[in-house]
Amino acid sequence: MLTRLFSDPSLLPEVQKYSGWAEDSEGEDSKIKEEDQDAQDDMEASELRGGSRTHSEHAGEEDEDDEVEEDDDGEEDTEGDRPKKRGPKKRKMTQARIERSKVRRQKANARERTRMHDLNSALDNLRKVVPCYSKTQKLSKIETLRLAKNYIWALSEILRSGKRPDLVSYVQTLCKGLSQPTTNLVAGCLQLNSRNFLTEQQCQEGGRYASSSFSMHSYPYQCARLSSPHCQPGSNSHPLRTHGYCSAYDSLYGGSGSPELCFL
DNA sequence: TAGGCCATCTGGTCCT
DNA sequence: AGGACCAGATGGCCTA
Image (cartoon, rainbow, N blue to C red; front, side):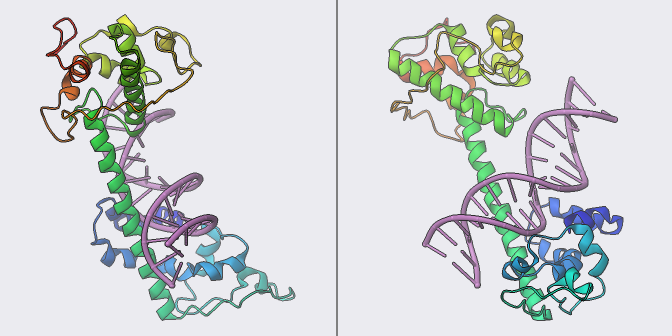
């Protein structure tokens, strides 16, 4: 049905209003989906169909029975001599039921939007606490997750060993599995030329992980308690945001950061 | 212009 | 029954 909506040029301007998320969708929404919704019945009723019908199947019949209910067996019965399906009888799609169905769908859509926005804001918070936060050049969702994983791993490794890894290894670890643009971004953030630490990552087409001083065959996420006071999302002074490497060191070792390790 | 990323809608499933 | 979660589909935007 959505397919039909989008394929119908006359409906496109309306449909495009969806992109602005808001409760205002109520008004136009119902207008847009009006035709669609009457074909969209309760879930329980749809079970009788033995699968969802395609959009094109809907397209042919929806206009005529605006408030009527279609007979459930729909297309099968049109042929006449087929036995009726078993199971609970599909209730008639009265106008009231159609309205209820619409409202339910709109509410579900609103909830889904909210849920996705919550998810996105959580991702934004994550972007702020991984190295290389930039308001202008946001990491993609997938890259944010990858970098976060690498970052956790790198910090865990530092805690586990209790000593500083060499810088190149640290950056390598951060960039494992990241795309080239993100790798460059991380390198830029750390003020390190990417050519200095990109090794097999670029050379091996298939391999997602390059080798490094950190063994990547296992992920001993062992209670690395990094509840640093620095880690406050939204704080512009968050050292990890801009200093990455040296700041991680600072928070771990309590020092002011070795000059040779601070790149920014 | 192709491809990546994203927002949104939608229907299905599971849980309370 | 209704909400949360999920994955597929779709179209828009942006960039190389």
